[in-house]
Image (cartoon, rainbow, N blue to C red; front, side, top):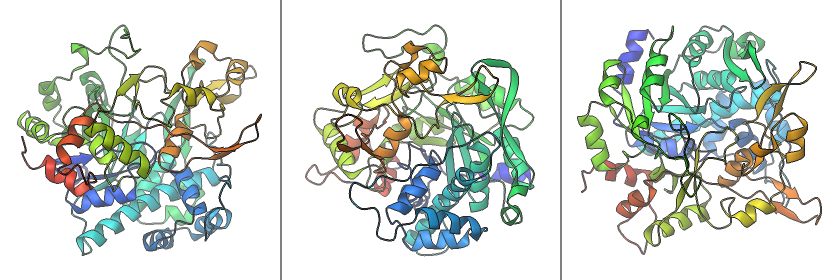
Amino acid sequence: MSSEDLAGQVRSYPDIIQGGMGVAISGWRLAGAVAAEGAAGVVSGTAIGTVLERRLQDGDMDDHMQQALAEFPDQDIVDRVMERYYLRNGRQEGQPYKVTPLFREHAKGLATELNILGVFTEVRRAQLYAQQLTGHGRVRGPIGVNFLVKLELPAPSGLYGAELAGADFVAAGAGIPSDYPLALDDLAEGKPATTRFSVTNDGSRSHEARFNPADYPKLRDASKARPAFGAIVASNSLAKFLNKQPKAPDFIVVEGYTAGGHNAPPRGPIALDKHGQPIYGPRDMVNIKELIELDLPFWLGGGYGTPEGLERARKDGANGIQVGSAFAVCEDSGMIPWARTKLIDMALNSGIEVLTSSKASPTGYPFKIPNIDNTLSVDEIYNSRQRICDQRLLSEPYLTNSGKLSFRCPAEPVDEYVKKGGDRAATIGRICLCNGLLAAAGLGQIRKHPVSHSVYQEPPVFTLGLGANEAIRRIVKDRNYPRFWAKDVLQWLRSGDQ
């Protein structure tokens, strides 16, 4: 597809893009349900290799999974993954998941194969589910993949998995995704692709995560098309910067600071309120007129997830809006059912308290967390959790004294972080989002406490935007039956309901 054809296709995308939330919260079922209703469905690419192998250990093998695996171009990879992870009847109660393989710079192997296969199966299951819901072979809305730029080493192989699956688009935020458009071009042509990443104590050298399709000939020879690329930004300056790159994004999603998940830090000196939340101001608001001048399709997120927000966005010149929180607690979401029920009940009664934590995320970015019982938002649970870093997705690369590339995370055991040269103060309040977000989707690891030897499951952590209370209260019509689905969210957003 030519650049002109791709641009025209993006401009015809629907008015609503479903947000790519958390780890498996925006899963195949949610994305498929959204696309079946004619909106843009999004699957989360975060920790997708771990999601795949844990689902297989839980016996997840419906017809759509079977078909997706059967369609994957390299059945040798499928056989290796299935032999290692698939349990027909699932794990026994109290049985831990197998240890997830870690990514290495430029490395190929099981971690890379899980990443590619994870993205591929998630997208294909979403496509197949949407086809099932519509009752024919055509999906009404596009289906894409959301990546976190801060997850640096999995990026090139994840993009390749999206291309192999026929994803319509890729979106990326929580960082500066300037390398993604060219990487997608290279991969579509069967060339090696790289994305640069920074190393904490090495400002003089450029480091790259690399994936070479030639390492997997059966994948390289598979037919694929380049997905459109959407950059998720929070400022005009970043949008302008990306638009001036040798390869610009095909579209932009602007996320305001009220959106869930990671937020951009406030511009200028950081000031905190009495709850430790960063204070945002006028400099953190985007100038819509300047966005229009870039001549790129754009969608607005964070504070626009209402019928009035959709109307306002389109009136101001946007193609539409991105919506997350309302979808996060709908029945199609990948969130643990008890948490969906609890959050809806809280919204309908006392209200969900959502705090923008300046400390929680190992990335250093502000991160929104709803205060909910039995989760890491509760001090007692946070303080009693054993610190462990066995996913390493949000860790920071650094050079050891011998010049070797290694990794550390401020959410890992404090003494280990300090031993690696990290600042002890940086560990205060940090949450292991890798394990906490996996647990939020029902995929939490089983642990044995080193002192008491008791068996427990990783506690979850959730994220929602500041508009969650209003959206839930307006969508739920019957408090005696407060469940709703993705189609209900879309019908409300498009209703013009005041």
